[in-house]
Length: 152
Image 1 (cartoon, rainbow, N blue to C red):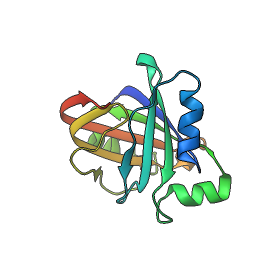
Image 2 (cartoon, one colour):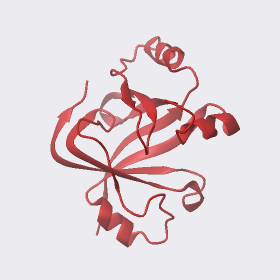
Image 3 (cartoon, rainbow, N blue to C red):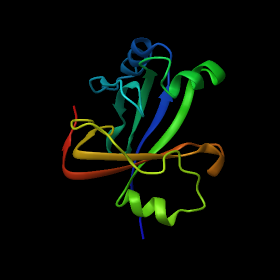
Image 4 (cartoon, rainbow, N blue to C red):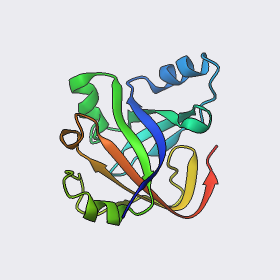
């Protein structure tokens, strides 16, 4: 059975990424370098702020109006967008967790070199569970394959 093996981050949608990064840095936290993902399905710039070994906060901002984050910001304003976890088998989770409403019929494969928060795998797969399935929370589900390095 597929299992959640790690909490990764809370994604927070922001309008002013530079301003948000500064506010977190002013609290003594050390943001990682920006990760720009202009292509679907993400279309965001992500700046992850590690919170020790327990996880992180990821500040996300749309790269353009086609980003799924853009209508979220327009409708709801800034705030928590999703919670991200790592699973041991994404395809298995999609098969087994049939009570959940998945965004995509198959896992999205991100381009080589795409990190998941503070981790940089050889290959990154993802899918999203729609908020209506989990009490209003969008769950971002990652599988990291191959060698996994630290993203700094």
